[in-house]
Amino acid sequence: WSTGTPGSKMAALGPDRDQGGMEEGAGLTVSSMIKEIQGLKDKFKDEDVEAPSPFQDLEKATVLQECRCFHEPNIEPRKCATLITKMLHIVTQGEALTSTEVTDVFFGVTKLFQSQDPYLRRMMYLFIKEVAETCNPDDVIIVTSSLTKDMNSNDDLYRANAIRVLARIIDTQMLGAIERYIKQAIVDKNTLVASSALVSGIRLHGANPESAKVVCRWVNEVQEAVSSPNDMVQFHALSLLYEIKKNDRLAISKMVTQLTKSNMGSPLGVCLLIRYISKILNDDASAAVARMAQTFLESSLRHRSEIVIYEAAKAICTLDNLDQRDLNPAITVLQLFLSSPKPTLRYAAMRCLSEVSMRHPMAIVKCNDDMEALISDPNRSIATLAITTLLKVQHFYK
Image 1: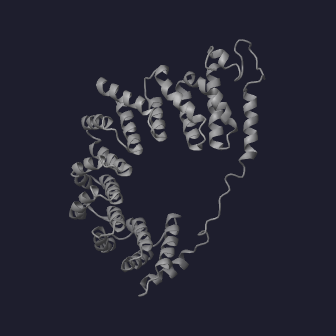
Image 2: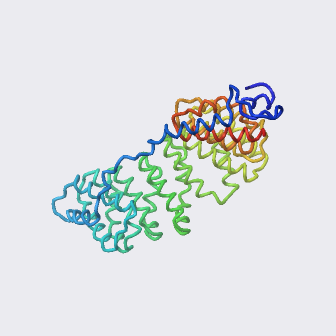
Image 3: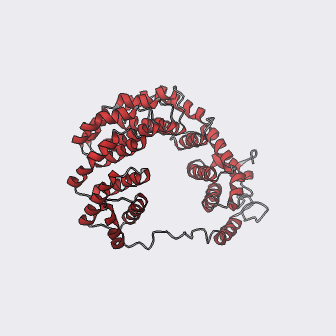
């Protein structure tokens, strides 16, 4: 279907406008697609059956009774970690704990800091983060001394997790007291510690205006972290740098221009950069910035990472005021993804093409053969998107 008129291309999809009737030929028709949908119903009927949860029969009162072992002088790390897991399950399932119950369990967990078992310590960090917002602020302060001690320990795992927990429970006044340690952690050689400090900075920046002012003072350390050789540190650093500068359009344009010339190594970082570029283009950027941004998006279609290629294609397809001719490079990439052995790529490409079909149905006509092949895809979501997108394209020709 790469050649010929639009009418000839759609001859296999349904009604022929010139003949004025419905042809049930060798091609795809509305009735055949309905039959495909009916066939898919039985194919996927057992797909949504969920495996039973090992914690589905937990009773809150029983678990709370068992948590009294936290106060025993001889701590059993594995038993305590299992109980914390059960409590986390109860909390995350929406079952409310009274203030007295939360306080009792919280104080019991704080007594487990005397254990040096790494698995138990990580479960303690998770529990404190989950219940800190429901605890009395005066009770939470008690645990900050233990967390501050962990933040300055020689164990990188303790340091990283302690920073993330502190970011959830401290106020602006205490943030000023530990600011020096977080700034040092942002440029730490250990990537886990650096990423934890950056993620904590993102959370603190959005907590309240006072904390945001403190985080904005870390801009030099964050810019240094953007140049880190580690992909995840680059990604988190770029996220925080954008949060710090997002209210200054000139600073954002300058940052994006510099980063497009720096050859970022992190695929996730490049994806973020593409999203920022897309926002700049849709916010009516200057001609010079727009030209640079469009050039970067087109070059990203040839990136070594599939997620970057898809993000660039998606950004091009969602830009406003683009002609069909400008969409062709992105559509070609998405067409290749339709035949990928990876379900995630097929689904992502199909979803993007479905959105394009609402505005530029002519642009995706060349993908009809590939989309028709996906009607029988083992993944229900992909098959559904293929059918609905083909119907949208057919509707355009009616």
